[in-house]
Image (cartoon, rainbow, N blue to C red; front, side, top):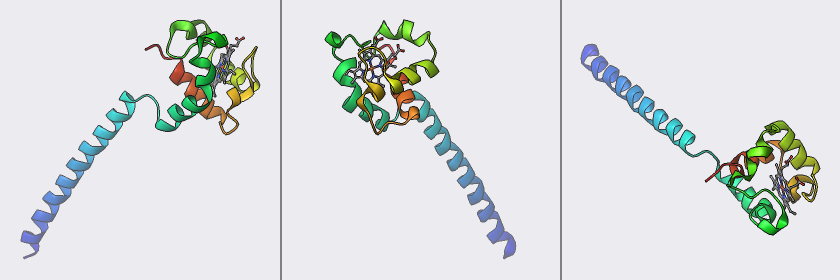
Length: 114
Ligand code: HEC
C-alpha cells in the first residue's frame, strides 16, 4: 500500500519539476526577447515623444542612429543629463514621476536603432 502510493507521488513530483522547468525556461526566454517593459514604453510615449519623435525639436530622434554619439558618453552621463536637463532638453524630460532607473530604461529603449 505504501509503495503503490509512493511511486505515483514520486513520478508526479518529477513531472511537476519537469513542467516547472519548462515554464521558467519559456518565461526567461520571453523576457530576453522583449527588451523593454510596458511601463517604460508608456513613459516614453507620454513624456519623451513630444521631442524625441519630432525632428524639428532638435532632440536626437528615437530609434535612429542619432544616438550613436550620445551613447559614447556612457549611460550614467546620459541619465544625469536627462535628470538635470541639457541644452533645450528640460530637466527629467518633463517626466516628474520618472525615477533615475525609469529614465535609464527609457533612454536604452529609444536609443535602439530600428
Ligand atoms: C521639450 C523637448 C524634450 C522632451 C520632452 C524630452 N527631451 Fe530629451 N532632449 C531634448 C533635446 C533638444 C535634446 C538635445 C539636447 C542637446 O544636446 O543640446 C535632448 C537630449 C536628450 C538626451 C541626450 C543627453 C546627452 O547627454 O546627449 C537624453 C538621454 C534625453 N534627451 C532623454 C530624454 C527622456 C528620457 C525624455 C522623456 C522622459 C526626454 N528626453 C524628453 C528635448 C526633449
